[in-house]
Image (cartoon, rainbow, N blue to C red; front, side, top):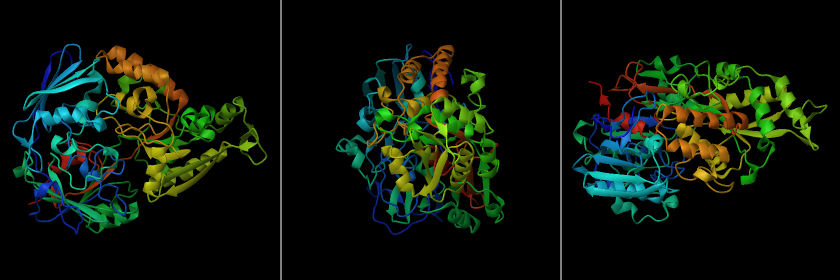
Length: 563
């Protein structure tokens, strides 16, 4: 998609049919009573929630419930991360850059309403872009001004060509009449959210939460399914059993033998590898990380000690893709890989190379077969989320492979909340976890959000939460990377951008704050007997997992009950 100079991009909204389903006893009513619960039956979804569910519909909260992100709150436009394609207008109708990329003029659709019936205008959009949670570091924003009810102009201190998705595809638009009074947004549970999306909250319990059709939604008449029930499931096996029994309609999860759930004649599935699976390492001692993994030599040794081919086959039954240490998604982003030697991470283990790296860094192998330095055995703690069987199996394999290279890795599982708290606060050594892939065919978003340091406000010291909207849990902070990120924001020249990305890639391939494992086998299971309109291989109009932010909301608007 070319966004150069005054080329105006007019976007046709994909008006759709939506889904929602079911009901449950609840403690939180929502959206000013604008829900319409008159549907034939609920569409039952598992998006990763475990018990007990706590009502939190704040899109900026680490513990936000998945249904808030797309079904309730929306950005201006939807970007399909599975393809290099034109964005779809949600609240927005079109946008246009000025010649130097420092201003974006946005036109929104006319006659929009919030779920409580209040008008949604360009003034709300301007407010949203200046709201602290959407704009934690200023992002170079000089002003956001509404010139009339449907036009807003965003002005920046430097060109913003590279941040189109961040600005227009992941900035949640908020009702000013609600959020202007929310000063402490980090602790705001927002139990009765007012949004622009197709659904509103009906009920929340410890076992599930239910969304119902928003009667004030811009395409309310086209919503095909009126109720969606998001249920809590504590492990993959239970979700798999529910799918097989026909009691769950949509789930994004790993199932090694899909026939176990598709044989009922209701469930179909699709595999769309998009997101990197990695070892998070709390890498930066200067920001408070502790443990052997703060030594780059240890991370480098562990990287070559891993047998990715075995992990791919044994933990993910061959469904994953090969990962690039540059974090460019292959083959979609191959043009951005500056050095062909960095195209794909090593697939076979090399214990001898791992040993050479450690010995060069002063480690000595002891009689117990493990390396040590200054009298301390090289021993690491590795956690994964209890019930995530593919990640748990990968962690066990990594432990075995590391031992063969003289590195002691103790693998254990923790509950979701402990995992979330550990990575947010930096109190961990190694985690098997996922990285959110980019929503456009360009790795910039990963470089800024996951590898950007303190200079670009993408990370924070251990003990403090990572800034809202950023994901650098490794606490990596490299001034060379930060400088290249800041320069990449300001260019619309592909050759210049590739050179800058090459600089970033050299640093992160050497430093390995996230040790690449695979491109995750993203399986999605959905009920095609009772609901139509799902993404398919022939029409992959959106990234299909139920847990996908924004995309899941867009998918819901495309579904219809089967006739």
